[in-house]
Length: 613
Image (cartoon, rainbow, N blue to C red; front, side):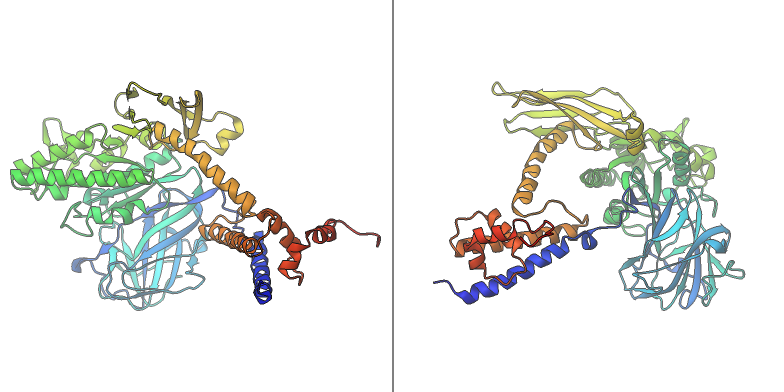
């Protein structure tokens, strides 16, 4: 005989869970703000943090209990921003007592009418523990492309070791005490370094994206003019903004002077900071890798030339795989000449040429930006053009202008199907299918190689095209290019056409993903039929997981009831009965035993009763 106490307790527990399910599924708790539903966070400015060396530390009076104004130039614009600060390399906590952001009017002055205070989870101050970073709350702020922005920090206690970016090529200003709201910092102590600031993201249209550049001092701007913002990534950013097809593309300069890919050098190595500085940025669609010269410059023997070249290529391959995993296109830049600098010898030149040959080879990177070809002296390819250099290694401002203007903007329009090399997919029948996509700077042909056994059938990609929507409203809603893949499904003797914005995966992979999507559809169909979920009211991971968890809990509880009571009713029917008697103090056994009474009683409960009949 069943324990009545169990059912009594179970009934009230079940009632609470169902009530909770109803409450949490309401839009008031799950709904998200839709004001920015068509926008996304995209990086507009960033710099690579590192441990500041002794010679680049903040000058007296220092940062503790003083104000620091730092100027940065963004790439793309937006109406809302947030700022990230880093204390990653400090050994103790750093307190930001107040942080203001404003439009810079040049030098140490700001447009005070634009000055706004940044908050951190609603507070004016925040303490970053050693090794940590913080991001401000989003704030409405009108950012225009290539705008100079002033970030003014009033510090509390700071660390004796400092996180920053020494190669700012931009002047910062230190004033004693709290002067964050002052229009100008007259009398400030100046220093050409950045401290603690890391990244600025803006809310931008869904079509916007950014390029993250991994580099060394040539990318960081050694040889450019302080405060002129004329590094090659700056020139490149200006070119993107002037082009109607790329005016929504931001540029993030993650160069570190003296940085190495493999080991040694200044700052964390390229391979160790790649995820932090490149892959984890907001809104990245493209990656540029222009680094390796500081590794090559240490080569002094034939064996070292071979080892370093092989290790650099292995590191590049790892970066390519990681980028493709996140559906980013990744472009490699050839290493520029350095004859005339202490790095040069016959072995380092052999190493450079070996690495450059690999970078240029189709099928490795998704494309090549050939800075070596652009900058080398045609009469002596081991040297930079004489008018573009200042020390044999680093270009001057004119050289950086040439580099920035030489980058092919078509690489950043999405108009090329840039997936190089042979991508093989093994089908269920053992077929090997290889595709070689076109290189943006070489042949536009698409070659398909099939290795077919003597039995069964094979599904193939008929065409892989780049298209653009031409309808009036569709072209406005989605102005970017799309990919149209026509696929022959031999199993069902059908031609299928798929549209996607993924230009990284092979066409056959895309087709297989779309076919597998049907299994996902069946899964959600089961959820709708059994878990009583008709729609997901929240868009965050937490909201979706919570809603599914509650629905599963209810489903399992009903399944337990069905088994314990040995009911013939379906789970769906049991849920229907319980839903109409949810807040009644009716024992579960009675409610489920007298089903006709329940349905008769509640059949017209959703109708207005004008007469007591």
